[in-house]
Length: 189
Image 1 (cartoon, rainbow, N blue to C red):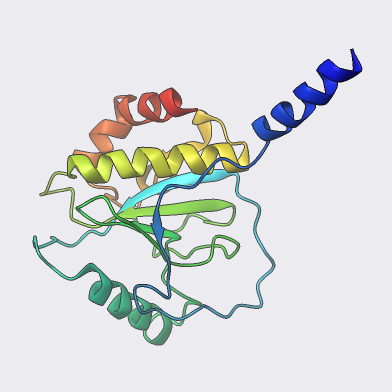
Image 2 (cartoon, helix red, strand yellow; image 1 turned 60 degrees about the horizontal axis):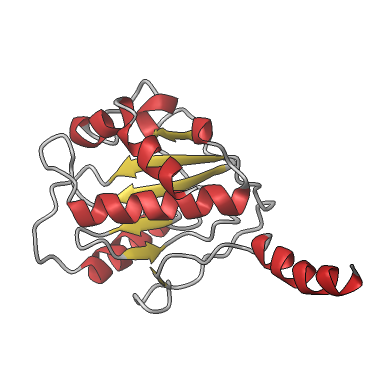
């Protein structure tokens, strides 16, 4: 019996470990700088999906866009950093933005404290999210849900929290509203 437990316990301990993260490009790798904040760290209880809200031109430099967004967020909006925690490019690459420990920011009335904010580049009122973006968004959301012990009911879009926005755009929102997005996340949980 003791031998069986000695073999099983390390295997069981591995089951409780943190799930591996999808590949994420660090802030330093895209040329950003670390955000400074004296705000208390947040505990993640929700995952909220956003779109950029600007038409994305194929071939645009994502890293240059992130550097401009970081500068605009800090200098114009006076936020601590980019309002989102993760940004997903059209090719499916996931970029780290604001530290997850810091609450995000929004131009609308909802309180993003406790929300992991995921933004896909593009304007999904007029564009379609790419298959690579959708795959990355599903994988990232599933990883965040596992990591923070969040159920599918805590996954929503910006529009679900605010009546003042069209975000994440009708073409991405249709996938949220139909249940497709949560179903895909659920398959990975």
